[in-house]
Image (cartoon, rainbow, N blue to C red; front, side, top):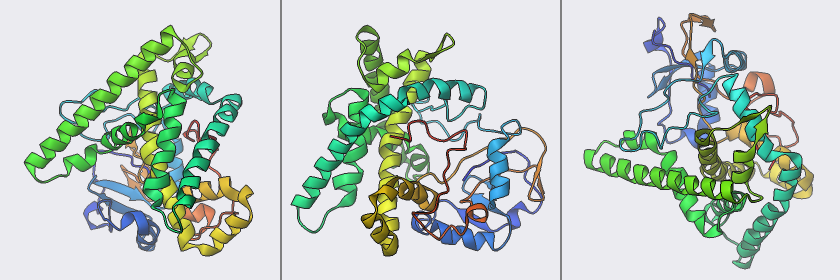
Length: 357
C-alpha cells in the first residue's frame, strides 16, 4: 500500500469503511479484508494513520508515479527519543526524483551482473548448508528459526565482509529499526520507555559499527558491499558518507527483517496452495517467478505513503490522502496465487536495487 498525506480531510471521511493496520489478522488475511473493502467502493479510511486508502490499481499506480503531486519526502513516523538521527532512514526511501534517481543509480553499481553472479555461489552454499541441517534433523523443522532468519543474516554478513557471528546482531538491529511504530503504541509508560532505550541502544550500536567499517574500507578496500558503495561513482558524483551509511542500514533491514518475512510468507503461500507447491517441486526453474508472485500475493510491505503537494482528485475524492493496495484489477484476483503467471515489477522506478540477488 502507498499513503499520500494531506492535512485536509475530505468530506465523508469519517463514514468510510475502515482498514485497521493493527488488526492481527491482516498479515494472513489481508487479501480477504481488502477484497471486502473493495466491494464497498474505491476508497477506505486507514487507521491508525488517519489516511484515505485507495483500493484500485489505476489510482494507486497513478499516485506512485506522479511524484510531482504525491511526494514521499515527509516524516513517516515519530522519532525514537534518544536516537532521533540514528533511526532516521531518509536516503532513497524518503526521496523523490531526481534525488532518488541519483542515489539509486550509484547504489545499483554495487549490484552489477558480474557482482551478483559472484555473490550467487556464496548464497547457494549457505542455503545448502542450512537445508542439509534441516534434513539431518528428521521430518520436521522450524522454518523461521532454522532457515528464514539465518539465511538472510548470514548472506548479509558475507556481503558486508564481516564475520557470520554477527548474524544474530544484524537481526536484532533490523528488528529495532523496524520497531519504532510498535514501540510508540505500547500503552504502559515504563514498558514504552524501556523499548525506546533498547531501540536507541541498537540503533547507535549499528551506526557506530558501520562507521568503523566505512573507515576501514576507505583505508583497505575489499571485495564487499561496503567497498562497492563508498567507491561507487557516476559522472564525477559519489555517495556522501551519510548516504552510504544509510544505504548500509537499509541493506541490513531489508536483508534481514523484510527478507525473513518474505521467505516465511512464501512458504505459507505454498502450504496453502499445495497444487502450486507440486508445480514448483517438479519445475525448479519457476522458483524466481514463484517468489515474485508470492511478494505480489502477500508480501511483507503493507504500506507506501505519499503526501499530496497540491489540490488533486482521485477516485472522485478531492484533497486526497492515499493508500495503495494489491493490484487485483490490473493483474487478476489477488487471492489467486499462480507461480507460472508473470506479473513482474521491474517497470517500477522503485524496484528494489539488488533484488536480482
